[in-house]
Length: 313
Picture 1 (cartoon, rainbow, N blue to C red):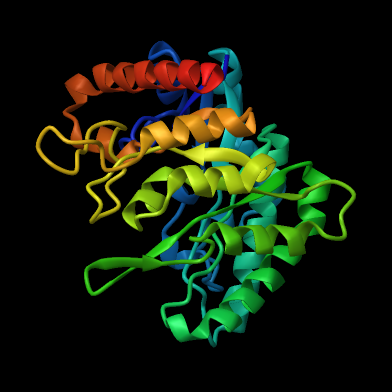
Picture 2: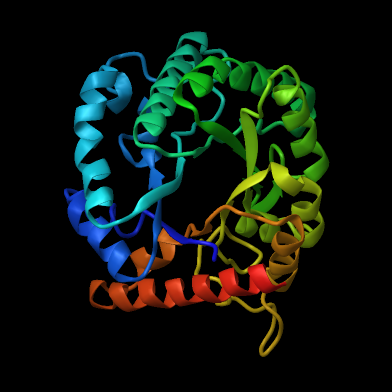
């Protein structure tokens, strides 16, 4: 049966200073077998392209391994594996070449850390330009960025997963990088063209697809075996809320905003073998701490339901 997974945000990273030991224990107690680890939670987003020494990832790789050692050990202690992880991300620092190079270097460190933590899939956001007219430049920058990570990914034995993104403009979601299956497949074809084995895969974000009104069944089936990971969460079709699946309906008594049935059928059709992973940390932040254990158990029950449906079709 497909394994269930929960992102660390909302559990491991609920409160500043929480120990990874406590978070891993709670994830396991809820019934999950895997963890989606969030490297982006370490440090301020503004520092990922900073060159003044303020970035958390400016430490040496050995220092970073020592820092993350308790996370790896806590997962092992509770019988959890890291099904996937999320790398730090930023807006493209246009005109700041030094900041861009800094971000590339810390991303390479995170790839190395992922390999050391035995994380098979690392989700790395492509850049989305705010000026929609710069689509060609956006693609050029993204291909340059991801190509610069190939050697690090090979050495770490980590598959880099691109993700379907969106951008908010005037209070409304618009297309981001790889928000269409055709564009996503084009990126993967180019990036994997000269490699003996595929270095790049895809992480399908169901919430982002719902926000943009995408046909989820078509998107997933077109990705086929390029799909290595998923971000499962729900929203109201207006904002990226990261709610628990099946909690938002388009109308009173109506169907869910997110096409969960289409997702189930599509994942079954392509023979998806990754984890049933929930990116629902935002929902857990909203729940009173006394109810978070119940919320995690509820999310896990949905995961078991989805895993069973995906396997049976």
